[in-house]
Image (tube, rainbow, N blue to C red; front, side):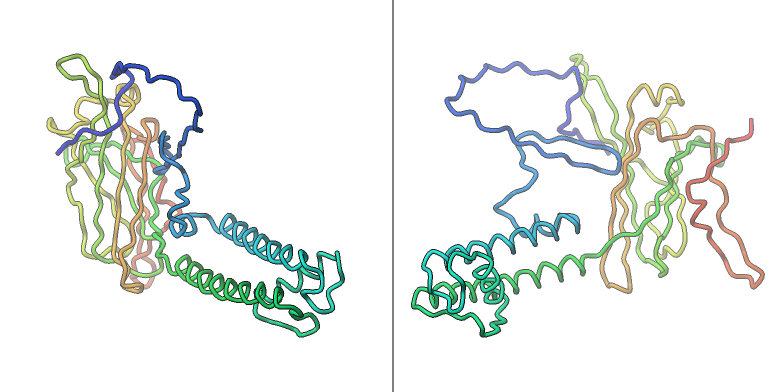
Amino acid sequence: MSEDTSEPGPIAEFSAVPSPPRKWARREKHSRVSVGNYALTKKGVSRFDWADPYRIAVDLTWPAFLSGLVGIYVAVISLFAVLYSLLPGSVANARPHVIFDYFFFSLETLATVGYGYMYPATTFGHCVASVEILTGLAFTAILTGLIFVRFSKPRAKFLFADNPVVTTHNGMPTLMLRVGNGRATILAEAHIKISVLVSETSKEGTTFRRTHELALVRSSIPVFPLTWTVMHEIDDASPLAGLDAQTYLASDVRLFVSFEARDPTLALVVHDLQSYGPDDVMFSAHYVDMISVDTDGNTCADMTKISEVVADEA
């Protein structure tokens, strides 16, 4: 049920022989990874792998993707405009030393428009225009594929409660997390896993962090129409046994949630990750009931109340 992680604690240190200084010091690579509100930094790993441009284009946000697209487009147009201007007269009706004429001719050629007022007039101009036309065709094909992939990428729309709660359920202290279906359609085959990251000390006195998968009362449901309150009973075998609000916060315990479900409309599996820090869990509290029945006898779920909690009675 448990496995060691690659994240040592603050006490786990290892001595190593210092390497000799290098003549040319490379810039240290690092990347930042976020799981919910939990951030990790990886050293020695670049944030963008330029050998995998497809992953970069899909992973970027829409503003960054569009900005990069415009930047590359303008750079390619400008490059060919400079090539045309190297040999005056290569483009008919283009004014010498007027870079904008060559720029707009390059734009029209890359887009394969060709209005006809300016056209290649020399062998050099025809060669550069031919290369630019082929570049424009390839650029358009690649751009069309990337935009299609970004639009067709399935997006999970799960609503996680802001705070997991610990309350008494059937006479047992129970960790609860409420998840809602944020789509207007019903999801199917929902599966959830909750893992807890805790600090442990070995017999040798080394502190390390270990991930335990929590045993859930129910980890899957066949149909997910509205909400689902996931439960973990804190018994003697639970990694959370014996922790109250103060000791839980001092232990720096973190919860990681992996949730996936099948969207029948898309015929795809959508998934999402969420994390909760030690100060996110609320003890001696329970969720407000968000399910009601209207006058016609239909079940109604108020998704705006998914994170509302109240304190337990004494």
